[in-house]
Image (cartoon, rainbow, N blue to C red; front, side):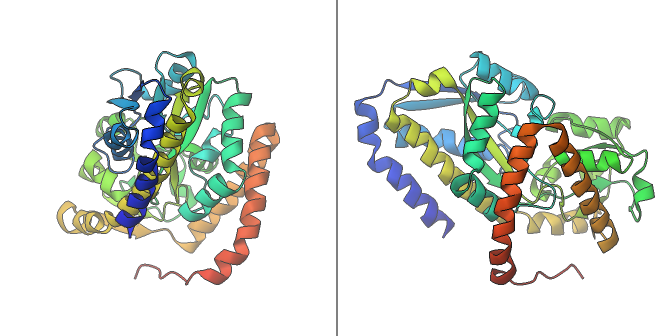
Length: 354
């Protein structure tokens, strides 16, 4: 079904590719990526797009990817694309929290939404419009396209089991986005490190624990070699949205056909990345236990309640500090309140680990 769905989307693009070539000047997008292209979902999604865009655009669009740090440092991508240093970049909006407080709302939000609800809001609610408005209002000269969404993450790798909030106090931990604010409120000291810097930081003791992504990605980064307790569920990132940023001048210079090609191809990549990352986790979880000596743990109800209550406090405070954060949060909350009736009736209860 995944291949059929993606093939249908690609077919729509290919049908129009002749028209794209007729009225468009060829475009070469030089795309620094924030994640190594070997990392499933995070890095492979943009490679998936790059491998297909020339074919489906009838050679009207070509794309060259640059691994993290080769052309632009991961945390400098937004500025580089906006100023025209590069004409595109692939990253996650949550990296811009220090510049735009609302940005993490477009990557991952504690306690949901999950992928289906997130995409419903982005594609058929006001999410997509607000996403672009965020960059426009902040003065960034970029066009944004959601281009990938990955399965839930784990909520961290620890050197010992965590049974109470008291054990989080003083913990030095790599943590992403809005979830990091929750951990800070609970007494942990958090920082945001790119993928390649996390293992050395664990090895040297600069951090005691880390979260980064899904089991299939975390295994490649080798966290299990140092910390053996892997906690679930990823309450802070039940789904993670990725973004393709294109310099506004470059985007405005494209034909409508080229713009549509990128939009539809990114929608196809989003479907593919979610299905792919859902398919590759369970074997890794089994291997972590049987070969790497990892213990998979599920947070107690008390700890999950604590995380959620703390997040509710943080969300109210962030909305009170920044008007655009409040605008996005209010819109998303209203959408989710309407979605609740569908979610409550449509889905089966989920089994807890035994």
